[in-house]
Image (cartoon, rainbow, N blue to C red; front, side, top):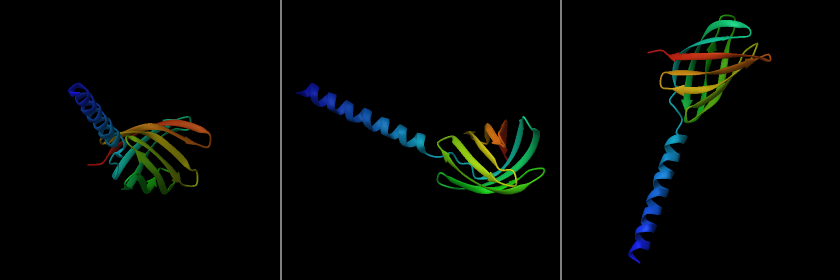
Length: 121
């Protein structure tokens, strides 16, 4: 009987640890602030600025590139980020967050590119 109680106790403890790890993994990364974005790909390279506001996993903000500016909206799930930029030529960004840096891929008009970003201090 004592072994069964210990086994049940260990099972409950493992379940609690697994649940806690899942909750931590689902917490969205903090991306609020001003970011300098460098893009490169099929259409060339450019430097852009995005300013992000965050409410949980939802992000909104502004975008300024060399030839256009607009608004953006998207989401952060753990360290994964995705957002859509509403401009004359819209962009879709997907990537990952690592503290004060991000990187990923973007698409616009059927072309793709890579992007990196650093948060302004």
